[in-house]
Length: 194
Image (tube, helix red, strand yellow):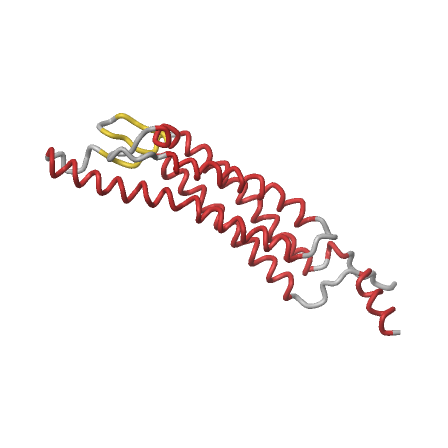
């Protein structure tokens, strides 16, 4: 009994090359959702009064500057959410080249790193403000601290980066695996040769 050639979607190249971006898109989707939820939870507490990321973005900073730039975090998380949702079906669709899933996964990494910049600024500003409070009032820096929403947002952005990395690595590995062409492409090459 002759063995049948594997169907194009069953070939190892397609399983790795398409499964990596699809799994990475799912991980990035979950990370984007966590980052959005974390933005609505308390980020910072000042003298036991919690402030969410949304409340911080609506208030002036310690020296009177506008903190509206914190809206970058949920905006980029929403864009990442939509992009992650589009990576999953595109990676599974055989007519889309493998590099598309990898490229979209790389964009997810850039979005997550861009959204992490405000978190770094808030954490460093908090340390500076704690030092000022402790020197002025002798509180020892205990008046200001980062809360669970901040860490949940940071973890969500980390998950987006991991998912994007998984998608890029999967797409590269799938492209480098030998013999992953579909029957249609093999027949086209045979017609070109003969």
